[in-house]
Length: 198
Image (cartoon, rainbow, N blue to C red; front, side):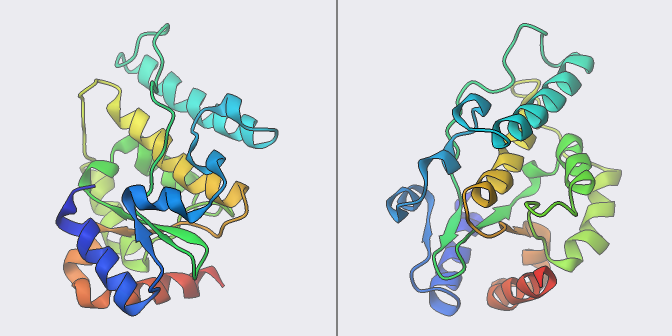
């Protein structure tokens, strides 16, 4: 994620929401289960391993079918995941999704898994305003050619794994809602998202 949003959102969260929140590489110091940061399905016990493997295979198959990944090629080379912000107060990650996160593979999987108990939580505006607009013109990143499916897999595991290992659902704030609402509404956006979870 570019520093355009990351640093500013983290500062707002620390000031207004959770003074112990940390971002980027500092999250590793939070004594969280290291498996939260491991996207390799083989690193996990059942049923987590199967869920991760199914997501991986679905996205790899889609990339192969579209001619963006050779059948003998791995969708993901590096299995280590990172996070944008971790809030100890809420025992959850807060991710700020910028434009590159909204490829067609990701958008389709977001809608398909929206009701799952591990699915990331977006502001209501994302679903009513931004999601339809993004579906009409999804973002594409073809470096490497299967980058959209690769990123979709890693984003999905940033939602699945924290919940699988005892944390609360990941909050996701899209850059479009942030731009519309303004940084001074970060705390109220988080509160709005938390209220939808109840």
